[in-house]
Image 1 (cartoon, rainbow, N blue to C red):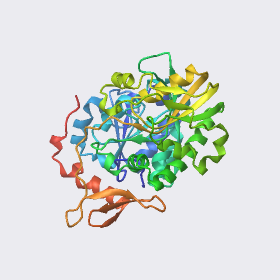
Image 2: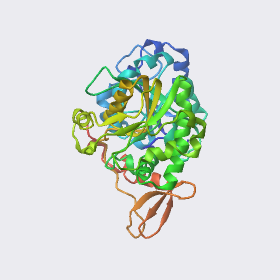
Image 3: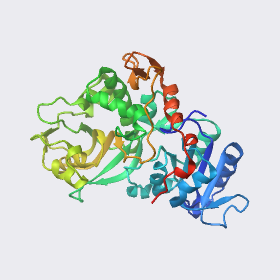
Image 4: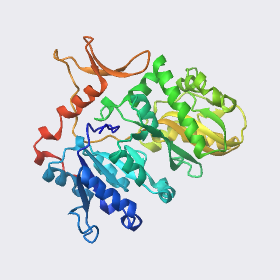
Length: 408
């Protein structure tokens, strides 16, 4: 099975966190069928503390705090495994062990998504029917921007995560869309993550990055307009004074011609310069760092779609949203190219090297944006082969299983 998961080379094991699913799932026939069908095709492991459910299946009596011990006992290799859950806490714990994750939801769960911690997002968010297609029919689903930049064929989505609040002024709220994730350099997922690298190339104004991400943003906007049909203005988070804005290149690209009547990249501007957000400290300090640094050239009305590159704490985007509200906006939706993820504290992976001990780095073809690996001596490696080497060279197969860290 081909996978779109950032730390998965193949799917051998599927782990289901049974305790995360309430009665509406456990008594759902479609959910039950999914479990039995997965058991026929994969090495299926059910974890849970309840003994009165699915009595004909073996359920390991454990909760998420015991994941590492269970992986050790069962010799489950994280890079060949995916966990299915309805709990964001499970996803956070799974990320500590390099486990790929799927958040399963039903339509009426969406009202609870305001509680989602956007710093620990799953690889994908799917309903039961789509999970069946993914594992039993080999359809590919995932965050659109990640699939697109990796040039993985499949069906991508842009998903509403509910509301995000201004860190200092809770009366200001905005909708947050999820189209992809961003991983910092020292996260083990970053090295092989095409979207994270492509956004950095956009910040460096690489032409192929502009082309690739303009295509992404076109689809992102189209899918977002499917959720919010009342959007009547699209603008961007502004750059610092006297600096060119890489986001302007995307919004003013010819691929945005369909939306040009409602795009205004000159609406917001910075009234003064400010320090780098990543050096500001806590999320509260980040919010203070950009407090009152933006303004609007015009009064507006209606529903505004605000484009950002990487949403970390949300401080900068929400400060822009505050300005939009103060100038007449009735609703604001934030659409970032990617949402920053908290560091995984899973075991690190050594960078891949060629026979001359030269490290491979992720790069993109200037003509079509296709990802590949290149060493300093010019040696090339196909992307998927490099990704597999990166994950397999430090697989848990090579570890002493009693050395897997226990979760606190």
